[in-house]
Length: 134
Image 1: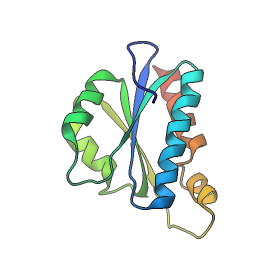
Image 2: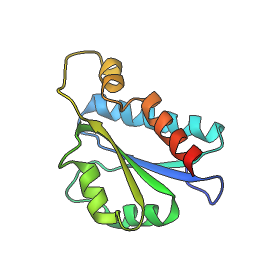
Image 3: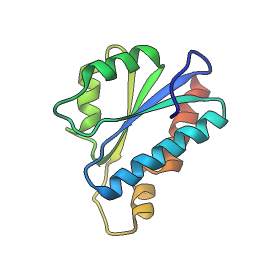
Image 4: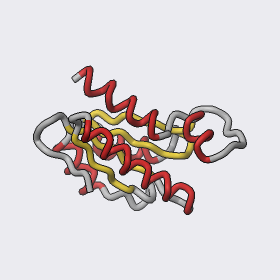
């Protein structure tokens, strides 16, 4: 499993999982982490399966050990996991949110992940953008 290391820059994202199709999306996030590692960016994936109870100790440790958190969720941004993580650890780390921000539509899993900016490609692009700005 990919983990954070002192160098190169470390970033982190967490993912919600509520059903089988989203669990496979979490597996895609591990693949994203491996792809980023090949590009010299160490990451870790935290599977935050629920907003309550929130594993504040794990998230706090990650916030202290990494340069930023990227929360990816397949739900509305407002009132979701990203807001909960931001409230819990936002003062210790920058929290970036990738989430649904427009009216959901029908489509394949891949189409929906791309449309809402939470696909493998969108996550990788966000982390690369963050690394370039660091």
